[in-house]
Image (cartoon, rainbow, N blue to C red):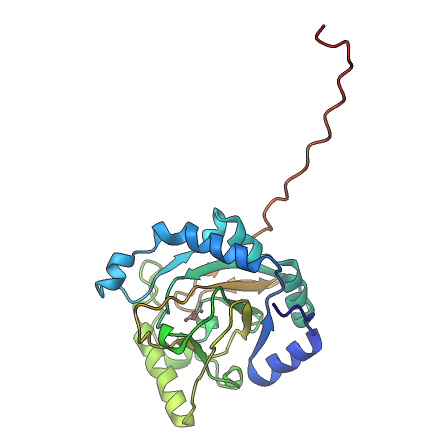
Length: 268
Ligand SMILES: O=C(O)CCC(=O)C(=O)O
């Protein structure tokens, strides 16, 4: 495992120039944690539906609530300190998503889903929990797209969706993203990550999931979404204000104090 310390200045330069930065995830026990997460999530993945072609992805949202290792990844102190240094405000994780296979998700920018005021104060950290192949539908992204226009529902006169059905008009956003990509003749890159590599993305980095061309492959990964303190938060799809739950690190086990030595005459 590459244990080179992360250089915040070079991460900042990558994020500014490209809208993303690739780092080695700073967790020495990652192999063991990845295996434990994989085993624990199996009962929740609908493999039969997936193999029958009834669903295109296998994901578990917010498993940090009951799975310590997912929570430890989301609240990794080196990552929290790094993001806080990069953005100049204290970062906090508010959502985790765990994937067993490719998401095949349409290209989008996260700030359509989770927007802060100011809008760029949000980011994602996508972590490979195994080596990712092209057939497994890797994460794809457009380098430099964080400098493209921010497309929100109001930018394209899209009606607000109801809170019960936030994706009601989402196809209009998809069309707008596709038109912009076509106009720029832009080509996406795939993140063929090795286990333990992570990609930090800017709130307006356009990204999604490539088609999974081989359904027998897995694509074990976790994304954690972060906000920064002192902002307000809202969902552009519905217009509602958000009050994100801040994910706290798992409680550390407190060692009980040593038992007092028994005196020899006790119990006689
Ligand atoms: O992992 C992927 O394929 C995409 C995930 C994603 O787009 C997201 O969590 O915002």
